[in-house]
Length: 239
Image (cartoon, rainbow, N blue to C red):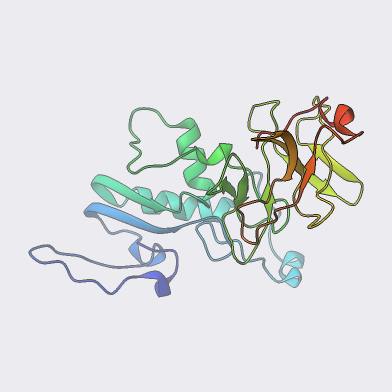
């Protein structure tokens, strides 16, 4: 079952009866097992996030208390078409809000299949594009946007823990933890990364957090000769 007819795959299964349909068309029908597609957090996902024409608000009934109320009823239809079991195919980087809620509130009737590094509710939304999620970068403890290369956002984890990251703007860099007093510095070369403490054969130094990223920045500064080192070490960055 799919939310959109265009999402139905062109597949054939030997020795099995495979029926394909949109959720709308499946009302009143049943099958032994059901596979639900389109469970991703985007406009053309399930729930659909396309906005109605503002003119419809003039004649439509008042908004319901639950978000995606009509889509929730459609999701219920999809879940109740199976006699024995339902498989929900979701994007682990951008799972549908419906899947996230099921994972947060489910009991023993829901079984997670596959290797998911973190639960969806722990995945921070990208502060730049607001469409992707921050996932583990290839190097160190930094995070990158899951929509790369379309979004090149890159962030470092803060040493205060709890998954907090360092975000920057024209006024400086701050930790997403309001109780953290980390005061790192923007990289003066690329201005996208922050200066993190690293260790080399000649002692500690400051390096850009985007080192090894795409694009990479190899800016360094001698920590021992840096008069601002004492101010930054009040908060640390995980390199």
